[in-house]
Structures are given as structure tokens and as C-alpha cells.
Amino acid sequence: MRTRTTLIAASVVVGVALISGTATAITSAPTVNAASDGDQPSIVEDYSYPGADKILQDRGITLISGDGHIILVNCVGHTGVIEVYSDNSPGDHSTDPGHYCFQVSGPTGDLKLQIPYAFQAKGDDQDAHNVQATVTINGTPSTVNVDKHGWTGFGEGAGQDPATLVEIKVTGS
Image (cartoon, rainbow, N blue to C red; front, side, top):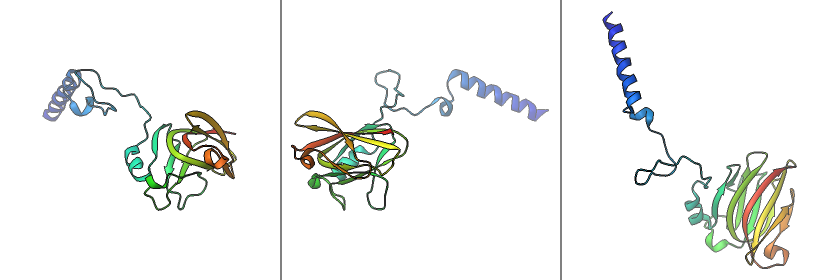
């Protein structure tokens, strides 16, 4: 009987703590943005690319945001990836400067980025994927359909002025 009374009393204390908000472990939640001056913290996903600062430092490219279905991977040992070449060698401190590979993990994907001096791209050899690259040349954007199994030139790779790759978009075919 004494054990039952202790259990009931403990349940009442936990219930009161939950109602009053003093049970920190239960009522705390991770946030994306910190609250300022009493405002409620934001829990809205901003789709920013994780580790973008380190990638900019190491590879010289800016990965801005996406839906998580297109990710930068090491080109060595990966097949079935979207490949991009750029004359961005001075900013890229990898073992294969200017060569960037992106793995697609779903039927569709979107990645906003900035790869300066990009000049060609190749699709991921997946017949189910259509790949489009949006580039800016002299501040003017244009969208290029990327060959699924071969190389597609743009910017200097197509006899034009230098291009910056600003978006990779994958749709189903």
C-alpha cells in the first residue's frame, strides 16, 4: 500500500510540473534561430545547406540552399553523379580542383549554389532524371538542359563569356 501511495504522489508531482511548465527536459525543444528580446524562436526550416561555410573555404563554391535531394560528394569512387567542371581551381583546395560531383537521392531535387567559371556539366546517367543547370552570364540567367549521359557546355564551354552555375534542378522524366 505504501508503494502505491508513493507512486501516486510522484505522478501528481510530475503532472503538476508538466502543467506548470517546470519540466524543462520535456518542454524544451531545439530551435533553428535564436529568440531575440522575448520573441518566440523560429522553428521554420530555411533549407540552408549544412556545412556551407567549410565547403566555401575548402572548395571555393557557395552552396546556398536546397531540398536535401542533391548533395555535394567526393568525385572519387562515385558513379551515377552529376558532374560539373569549372576554372575555379585557385579557390578549390581539393585533390581534384574544379571538379564537383553531386549525388541525387530522390526522383527530384533542387540545389541553389554558386560555382564561378563553370563551363560544362554531365547528367547522372539515370534515365529517370532530367537535369537542368541555371547559369548566369554577364548577369543574365539562362537554363540549360544537361545531357543525361554526356557533357553539355555552357559559358566558356559553349564559346560564350564566363558563367556562374547558380542552380541544379532534377525532375523526373
